[in-house]
Image (cartoon, rainbow, N blue to C red; front, side):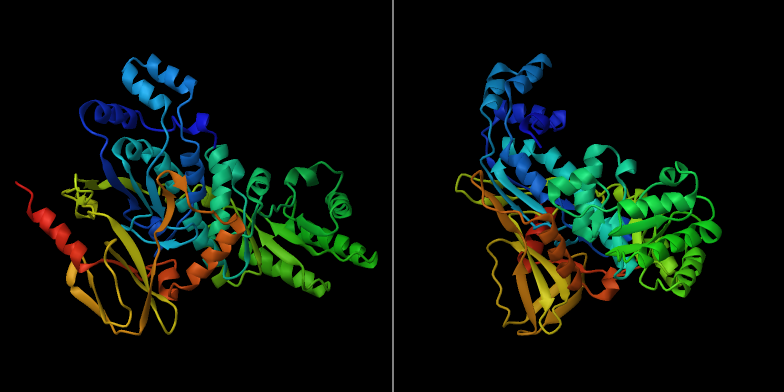
Length: 482
């Protein structure tokens, strides 16, 4: 995440617009919101991830001599503008929803309050970082939910779209709920568990399967999971694994964890047969792990079929979010500061209703049922709006205003979820460790109703607008000259 690597990690038009602002107008302070319009994978919720990498990007944002020379060589930037870039640093404010938080469409995940040239420059990097990690964290959360308490291991590095996607995808997968990753560099960088067994090539390199298992058990007696499908799972693999487990037991070796891994075939049938064989041999605590193009839907089906699998290795479909490979986050102007220091709301209008933005300087309150602690709704409002939870709160669907819910005073709680990250260019936020974020995410998911977490046709959590924000939005829409 070096400055030299990422300062130019931007679209060219960000820089050409910066030069346009530099040449034609004052560098006025503006507000941009980064948000998304639809949950990926037809999910009922998403997971926030990637903020720590955004923080590192902002901290190291400066143009090196080499960067400026490269831009000069493009022949489209003036010397005055290049001189400005050579002394660039971020001086604005950034507010964000903390990593691991459950998030929903249309609410600002990141709010940038900064001079317009600075706010414009950071758009692309913020989007690529947040879009990727939110996507993978959300996919991981769905896979973990389908596993119903079994451990899920992230095994996707070799199928990721490049080293960065594999590295930060592994980070996001841990946040989403995976218990470990096969990615050793991710283990070192983020201090998360690394897990793995062995490949078919290990078996094939020995004279026979039994010898391969025996040597692996000798090398790794405390964590001995044997891949049993190289030749014939039930006639060869499982019997040879049982033979090795017996020899370990007879030698007084008691592994902290041991078992078998299935990587092909009918996983439901094979796991049930293998479970019976292991139990009859006295190895009732042996783990049966499975891999082989798993995703949340296949895991859910295998659970329904009574598969005797208690550990899942998920690779390609997780690290690429194969069925929905894009998060769809956008970055839109929401307000411009006037001469009096007031933020004047701005709105983007579109023939596509879902693309019309929410204007102004906003924050988000999360509303919980006081008795159960479960989430009721999110409320987007202006930053100067205050609420008293002892009073009734009327919520309405901004797209269908006749749909209303009145929460009686004293029956709900509210929490502001946008937090200050940078103030006047100085970082005010200490990022938790990845494991701490993962635990926070687990607690966050517990605030969702089960109906919202289901894989198919989940119940929608409403993101509502305050009356004041709704009225301002309506006024701006009605003021447009056709």
